Length: 179
Ligand code: MNH
Ligand code: ZN
Image (tube, rainbow, N blue to C red; front, side, top):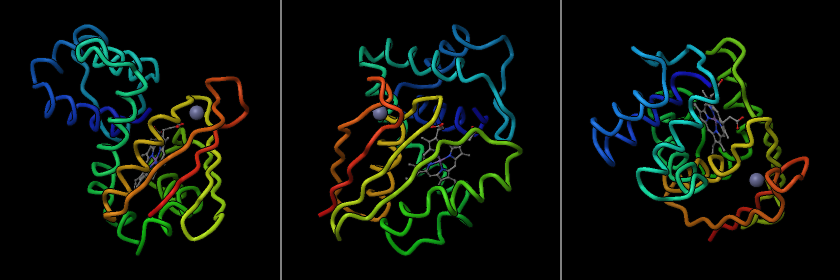
């Protein structure tokens, strides 16, 4: 995972539980002297260990932490890449462009990024069905990112997750219900 994602986690942790907590997490789960540089890749296992460390500190399940992280990560990425995030007039437009525009642009900015595949199908004007697939199985983080995007456009969103890679499915199904 790119440094930018770790920096997003750092921002959230420092805001929520403080700089000292982040330093403790780094000490426990990262090599000594680690500094995260946005375009550089770091081991996925390190991100998961840090997120698990946050979960342990907060006494919350890892899935909750990944969802909260995803939600704050959206604002962080949107702010960092305004040129990409400002292209979309609505939540729906953005969601339908995750693979075809957003992550396509990410591929131009970062050398060989590790991105999920996210296919979107519009069911009706209040329902979009997403199929998420990635060997990192970060579907809970994807849910959080979607909630963050809904917040960005001041929309009310509910997500159903009836099929999940964590239960052995080939891909996750996320059903987005808008108001
Ligand atoms: Mn996007 C990684 C989903 C918006 C840039 N993105 C990920 C991952 C998920 C994801 C999930 C974690 C990797 C994986 O699952 O295999 N991203 C989304 C969703 C939205 C989204 C659901 C909108 C909603 N992403 C954005 C935006 C940007 C962005 C906006 C920036 C303009 N995403 C990234 C980058 C990575 C990433 C950068 C990290 C790639 C890497 O580590 O190599
Ligand atoms: Zn899932």
